[in-house]
Amino acid sequence: MFDKLVQAQQMAEEIKKRLDLISVTAEVEGGKIRITSTANKHITAISIDPGFMQSVDLEELEELLAAAVNKALAQADNVNQTEMQAVTRDMMGGLGNLFGK
Image (cartoon, rainbow, N blue to C red; front, side, top):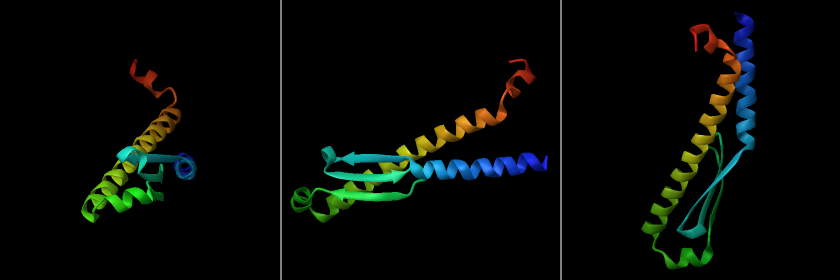
């Protein structure tokens, strides 16, 4: 039982490292604002078109930044969940057969 716990802990660390290497990018306003995040939901870059920044007021810019960040984090969450489901399936192996399925 202890071996399984250690193995699961090691697997969790491997997944975290792998998710740190996966990037997702979200854009709003046709790419004028871009947010890049890891699949572990760590924002790694924010890009704002300088011309766009001069043509928009502060309140609108803040709203668009929030929307872009939320979009990037949602994409990161989707990737994270997909990776975790794949690992869980691998860990469970053929346990589904135990229940007649």
